[in-house]
Image (cartoon, rainbow, N blue to C red; front, side, top):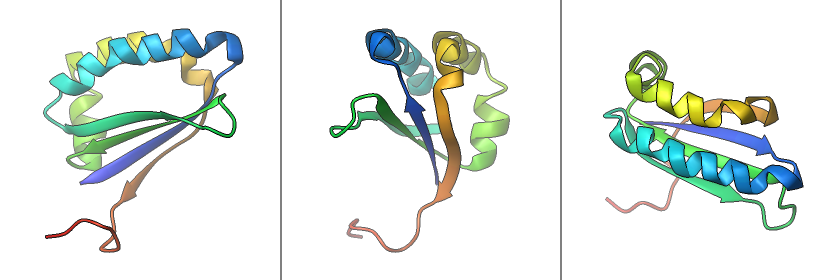
Length: 102
């Protein structure tokens, strides 16, 4: 599993539209066989910052599977107005250091 983190800086007057866009875009994530889960979080200290966390089956599953799928077209159409607000977008491998109990 790979975790993608996308950090956004959203202007005050765009927050409602941003959240509505992801409300719509989540349909594509739910439909993707490559997506294991996701969450959108808003910073409590500075409300203009958001983090989108997506769990993918693999980096290839995200970049080659999801991004080349019809689901991605609908996803990107919903969030396209906020692409310029992305401050960071990276993939991370989960380490053995975590709170999950086997």
